[in-house]
Image (cartoon, rainbow, N blue to C red):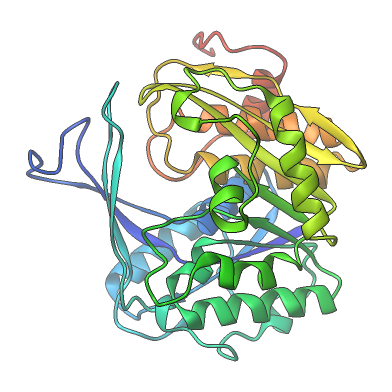
Length: 346
């Protein structure tokens, strides 16, 4: 069985109920989430062995977080402990023309204080087929960036395939370095790179001509992104597959969704999903990545099917509250076959 190792920060998520604004909320719904943990949960749901690596404080909140992940089948054998706090993010869910908002409270978190040498990467990556990281981790601190670079270098030395989600978050790069200064040295070790139009432009200055994400009205021309894929692969020759998620925003509750995958000189396109009543879009990209890795592992040599699985999996994630995509392989495959009626399953 394939094994996937992911590395990053998991946080306590405090969300306002329903569509309340921060100024209206008197209570918050508490769950956990974080890009790389979200990917691990997806893969565990699909029956893939996963190990999630992070650094946590030794307190009751961290233990509750670990119990939650373990209950979902995620391995935590290489978690390290230290520091004083688990990061937090606050979520206000948008509606119609009002976008969602995220406020981070993660400065000084346990993983922000991680340093190279703290994780035994050869032990953590033993027997792994894939190692997954995102651009969120090197945005946290210089130490986290250095630890991430250490991890991908060891992975390549051990013959472990590396996947990356660029995941640019402008509100995180606060420690004196820009993403463009840090990311290239880590990304260059990646075999599969996932991003969207903003990620590629903001971090690497690569963009599709004539595209404005704020004015899609739900319509996105997939062919516009072939040039982005080619430019990214030319800049990072180790990359075998470049993948871009395509979100067309009609409003906060109504998006179109899909993706493209470029490899071997060919651009493959997924089905475009029309998601008219979004429950929770946080973690949508992570659910796509989890589905993609499952597809690449399960359907070797069939990039189209892997891409289709990723798009269907992430479409379903938009119907599920919380960061985690709690769907089964059968549910994803049913949607791939065109069963999107939502009729009761008896």
